[in-house]
Structures are given as C-alpha cells and as structure tokens.
Length: 333
DNA sequence: TATACGTGGTC
DNA sequence: TGACCAAGTAT
Figure 1: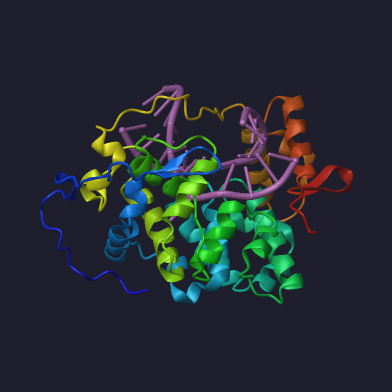
Figure 2 (figure 1 turned 90 degrees about the vertical axis):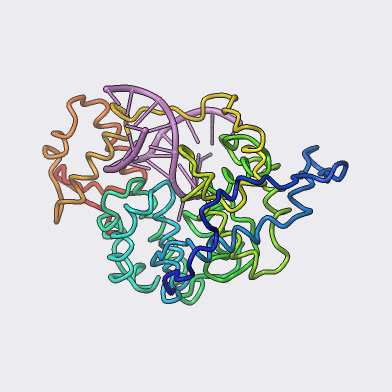
C-alpha cells in the first residue's frame, strides 16, 4: 500500500463546527424483531462515504494491510490483535510471518514453538489456537485460508468478529465487522451514547447490518475505515472530535456528549490472580530452551496451592506438557 | 449471560 | 497510583 500523499483539504476549520440536520422527522425505521429501531439519519444519508474518504487519507500503513500480506497475514494479525494493541503486535507479527509464511509452515511445527514465538503478547492460548487453525487449514483446505465465513468460523480461535474480519479484509466480502472500535463509533455516532454495552447485542448487529453499504467493495472498505476511525479518532478516552469526518452528524456529540450512565464498564484486577501466576510460569518455560524442573517453576510464586492450580490449568489447556521426573516443557504435540 | 484468560501502557 | 483500556474467544 502506498503511503497517503493526498494533502488535507479540510482546512483549519473544525468539520464538527457546522452540525448537519441529523434526522428527517417521522422516518425512523422500525426494527421488526427486537423492538429496536435504526435512526432514520443512518439509513437516509450514507455514513460510510465521509468515513471511507477519511480512511483513504489517514489510514495507517500496517503490514497486514499490504497486498503481499495475503489472507494468512490478515488472519495472523487478527489473532494477535485480539485484545492487544497494534504497537505490541507489530514486531511479533513480522517475525511470525517471516518464520511461517504459509499456514502449512506453522502446522509443521510443534505447538510449543508457536507459544514461544508468541512472546509476551498475552493470552497465549491464542498461539495454540492459531497453530490449530493452521493445522486445520493444511488438512481441510489445501493449505489456503478459507474465504467462506462458515469455514472460517469453524476454525479454532476464530469467532464472530475474526471470521467477518478475515472474510472482509482478506477477501473483500460484505460482512458486518463488529469489533470494539466499530461498536464504539456506532454507539456514539448513531445511538448517541458514550459507550456500547459490555457484550455485543442483537441491536448492535442489526444496526451494523443496516449501515453496511450494498456494494461488496464499499462494504469492505467501510469495515476497515470505521474500525480505524474508532482506533485513531473516536477513542475510548480523549476522543478527537475535531478530527472526525462525521462529527457534525454524531448523535452523541450533538447531544452534548452525555457521560456513560449504566453499570461500570469493567473492573478486573490482575495482581494476585491465577492469570498472573500462569503468566509467570509460562514465561519461565518460554525462555528455557528445553524441559524445566519443577523446582524452577516453584520459584515464580510463593503460595503452593495457587501455584499448583495455575500449573494444572496450563497443562489442562495444552500450554504445558508434563514429563516424567517432575519436568515440564512447552507442548511438542 | 458471566467469567476466565496476559501483558503493558496511559492518565 | 490504581483503574481503565487494547482488532475477542470459549465455555
């Protein structure tokens, strides 16, 4: 992909400065099933055009967006980006694709090598699932990442979002790609609230489908563009409305940006949890070239009951392989 | 539907 | 400084 070169023509003025008429009275579209409705403005005036134009000018030049990345590159990036910031993914992604340029290359490796190469990206089960997905692709799909949504969804580690993302980004298909960025953009621009619900709702899926451009190519670009808008401009905190191409039509902004009211968005501590212990145990195993004695693992956590529970969990998840004589290693199979 | 699952950066 | 946040999935 070439770097964006088109100079900005937006000028110094805030595009949000002149709110456009948002809705045509009396034309809201009732949604049959859930009792929700799609605001008229969303369906009457295409939202995607200004966002796609903005994307053409401001999109980041990320390696998995280049044509040479291919479907496998897109798929690897989607696994790595699940709950993980772009900046941390970048170096691991490059190393991964250089080492395993095709699904069959990864499938031929021990799963433990995938876990090791995963490094400190977090959620190492993703590495195992990516390895499993590569194996399934090698076996069932002739070594090529499937383009069919249902076949993608059947692969380990691929859920609703990732299946749509791969089908859309890698194959240009028309799917509602509903990630946390898009959900936030729609929550604000259309629904008029600061944050989407904690879990994706039927109403959100319905809205996303309603906003999807008819044309397949436009739909794929809208998916990438709306996601990028959420990542760069319509961020969770400190949003930059002055840089937003649809600020003038944003329901949340037009309403005075009311604060989120519902229940707390999240709240999970990490220190002292099994997750932290698992992380420490796996770090030792990742950094060791071969099997590690129990005694070495015992040093990562003082409390023996929790330590044993965490290790058992890793074994149960297939992230660690117990050997005889109290040795442990990353899985060979 | 709620919870488990890593890690590190930000304000 | 602690809470929140980052392209979710599986159960």
